[in-house]
Amino acid sequence: MESLHFAAARGAASLFDLTGRLALVTGSSRGIGRALAQGLASAGASVVLHGRGGAALESSATALAESGGTVFTTSFDVTDAAAVRSGVEALLSDHGTPDILVNNAGVQRRAPFTEFAAADWDEVIATNLSSAFYVSRALAPAMAERGSGKIINIGSVQSVLARQTIAPYSASKGGLVMLTKGMAADLARHNIQVNMLSPGYFATDMNEALWGDPVFNDWVINRTPARRWGRVEELVGTLIYLASDASAFVSGQNILVDGGMTSVV
Ligand code: NDP
Image (cartoon, rainbow, N blue to C red):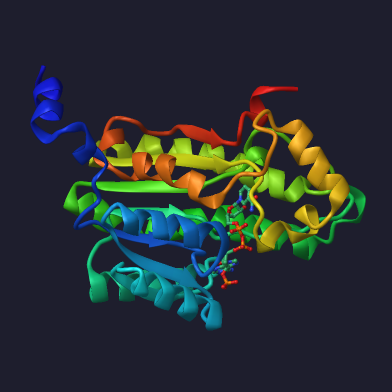
């Protein structure tokens, strides 16, 4: 019954406390990644913002630091295994071993299936799926050596349901479900929990073509039991759960934060 004493002694809220933890969120220069980094900072974590460099990364870091967070930045291309290795090595030596890794960087390309360019297929698979493998493979040994870690892969409704014109994206996000389970299988023994957070439809740069289209906008609202798009801050509670001691015995799971979309036809 140690767990009951443990919870009572610490207080339930402290299970979600990330004070003193260090988090790397890939693709956090903007959009969902930026909101996730902000959410982790609000729970007490120091965060490493990441992108391919440029003004968005710097302005996001400045904004987060001004709101009171401890923020660092790093830049590397998540599709380049060698760049990931050297980026992660520099991060480890500058800031120590992250407690939390959020594999969030992603890209979307749309075309009818028979017209999909091979280069676009490669880019989507590399950015959304191979990246999580490269970054996690580079970081997990340091987490294992410390004896703890949290890895959260960012999926999508397309992790479980397909849609016209985005077959490569669906393949990448579906692949992440099994990568998450495979990593959980290898890493749980090192007290590293690997899980997945899959957002529904959230209005960001990536899907401007969707929320800018009144027909698609109506479709999302009618298709979602909550009758609206998600707000990026609504991903934070689930993320903190998966990033904290509250999920210490949870691994290989995919939690959909989608206003009920994938529960209905
Ligand atoms: P955005 O396009 O707004 O942001 C993408 C982020 O990924 C940017 O920070 C970008 O950095 C980074 N990135 C892209 N390619 C690379 C690369 N090769 N190397 C390093 N960084 C890269 O996307 P969203 O915020 O909308 O999406 C974030 C994640 O959430 C994705 O995995 C997406 O699939 C997922 N998602 C989004 C949904 C939505 O409704 N928006 C719904 C479900 C899932 P840079 O500054 O370098 O461009």
